[in-house]
Amino acid sequence: AQSVTQLGSHVSVSEGALVLLRCNYSSSVPPYLFWYVQYPNQGLQLLLKYTSAATLVKGINGFEAEFKKSETSFHLTKPSAHMSDAAEYFCAVSDFGNEKLTFGTGTRLTIIP
Amino acid sequence: GAGVSQTPSNKVTEKGKYVELRCDPISGHTALYWYRQSLGQGPEFLIYFQGTGAADDSGLPNDRFFAVRPEGSVSTLKIQRTERGDSAVYLCASSLNRGTGNEQFFGPGTRLTVL
Image (cartoon, rainbow over all chains, first blue to last red; front, side):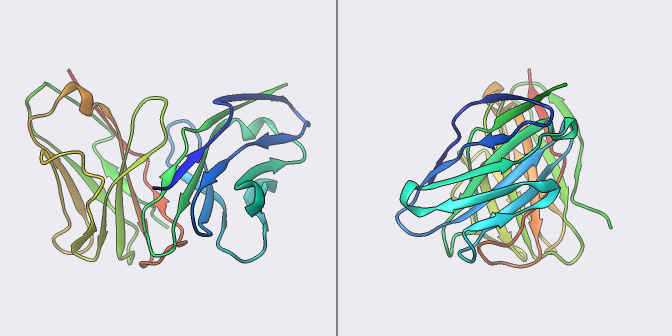
């Protein structure tokens, strides 16, 4: 079965600093990988997705993630944090031919002014 | 345009009662998904519809849970004999058509509290 591990349930960074949110997956075949963001009282919003094209994926709001098969990782980064980035971030995976998403437990990002 | 909407936004019920949660997907989206998000956890898959039929209901925890989508648009998640452990946020998502890797658009969720 698919699984996703997000290291760090809470991450705090200073405004303007690098954001790095970690995601590792387990899959026997190359999966599809997603990062979603959840703002308070709002639905999940897709930030970016990897679907076996380029390994470096650029998303909305300046976020990007790199698929590293050798490390089974798909870490999310942003060069310079903004106050508006404070939210909960979820990594998710699905196998080819399988519609459902398997989510990690989430990382709450706090931005320090 | 209108996104996925879910009603009610909050539902408080007593143990043993029956509840229905409604999802209105984005117009034209043929695929519809239900997930459940418990406190401090990521969403967990419950069921997936393609059109009117349930293509994958492997995530439904037991036979107290049932979902329908009779006309291929609106879906209702039904929970019988609710238990305190059913308390969670129930999320609905839709996508334009089937296919792994398609973006799923999520609604704001229904927060169910079973007393």
